[in-house]
Image (cartoon, rainbow, N blue to C red; front, side, top):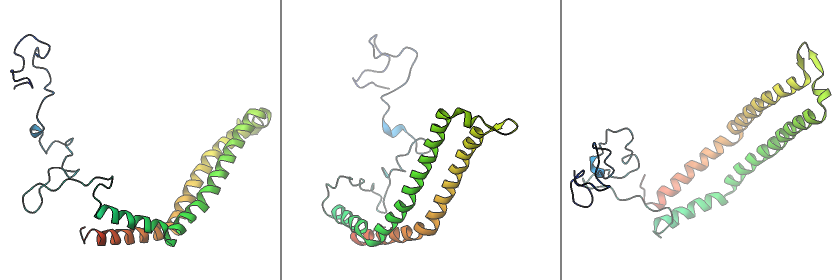
Length: 182
């Protein structure tokens, strides 16, 4: 194999010679086999062949350099974001998350402050070797699981259906902007 300077690898005594045939960092990309599980070029859309047998076009830039479809698709997302349905989903999310987070943080800070300022209270035995501090610490875990369950339930009952409808509408609108491409 040749190096980038045209000489065979290992020829000569310079720093580019490899003693014992080390790694070849200059291997061309076409030597990589698609069967290699670490080769994800096809997963990213590079090198795929479209129906005509030619490579598919490059992925469009996310910066909006193509003013045609990208700007109109962006307008669709802005329109959806400004819609009453989207605002309702966001307000339902905020009405649950803000009070839940505040209550949980207050409970956690209260636990930490009580543990540091009132060690006698936290050391008070409840049953055998179990004291108030241990029960409060275990209650922290319990409230974490309860808050997670309540969040998942709230999302399932009050937000998921509306968010799925918004997603469906957005996909339909962007398909229309892109000329029916899926």
